[in-house]
Image 1: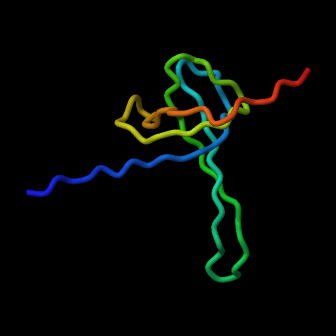
Image 2: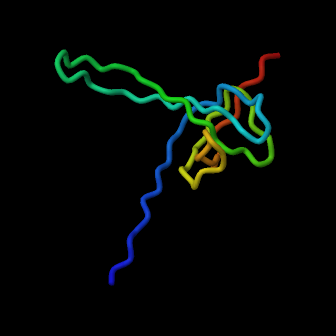
Length: 89
């Protein structure tokens, strides 16, 4: 009997909110070609992701991976910080 290979979804986006405890809101953009007109449209989705150490700030670019549901709206986990946000000084 062949084992099923689990498909792991990973997305990359920007943190837009970190006000929740151990949770960040990540905006993930995507480009889609309109089926009739042919123009490229920019769409985006927001995902709540688990941040165990509360270390992420607004503007950080992160990679998130789908996991089992952690709460009602949260089923993604931050796996990697791609880049930190630039501080304004």
